[in-house]
Image 1 (cartoon, one colour):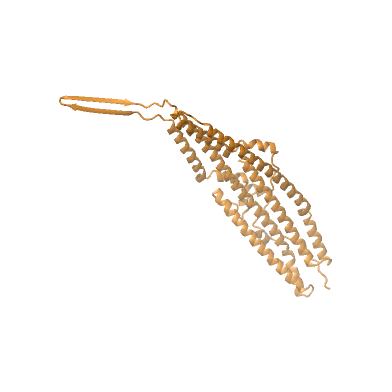
Image 2 (cartoon, rainbow, N blue to C red):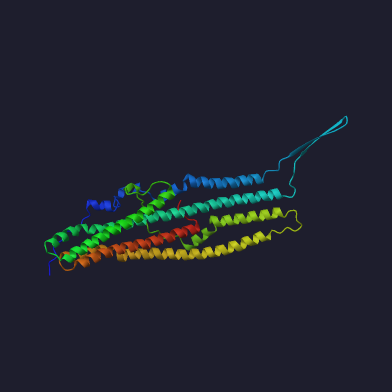
Length: 377
């Protein structure tokens, strides 16, 4: 038997700050980071995206303008010479649409303008969802790196002491070898987590069109990973009718009806019921499916938020006490190094599990916002 010596409490040295990429910056610097609203603003304002939306809308407006223009008048000039006689005639003609086809085609073009405007809103919502997922993925990776950095920093306070005592023969050689192995594992985990964070940062940078969320405190993303509770289900159900993709479908159906009526103006039998029937069938079925998806997502988000809150309170919060107890017992010679390492690893696993739950809740909440067109602006 050997007596485990008293070990000083682990302290976070200056070098560990570099390991966690400055993620423990003071709260006063938080407002210097990139938040979700700013990320959305940057992405939606990118010229490549905004110009594309304006181009689509402008093309539809031009088509509508062309559909409403009257046909150009025609001027015919004829000259005929017979012997000594010369005959000159001219005619100015202006076609008139007495069937009403022009008006119907103009109506159809205007409906298509509305459809394109709704499509543009759909594209904005899709981009917003991608930006929000990417933003919160960076936030999750930052928090994971912080947790792994804290875990790796714990070894700094004991590795040197264990190594020194092992050389003096006061602790078993196994403790020294095990400590070295755990330290290397922590370094590898830290490097892996940092690489995952850099990949997430690159994805977000590509979406917002500028360098973002680097290692400096002012460039990191700031926000809250777990989402807030969603609005009541009836409130979200009322928003389904305002979804831009459904509005685009309705506008295109009305355009089809107008085109159909214009095409059949010269026929004895005018049938426009097909278009209306297709709209009713499509809209009703789509609404039913959307409502079912909405109810399922709402339950999932609500339950995941509750589960994440319970786990953080019941498992993560007590981890600090468990680590303190394990360190105290090890210093007193009442426990082994393996038990101390197990407490360290358990604290890390509790934190990463909580982050995984919060990330899943956030993903589901973003999907719920996408379904109802409720992304923050």
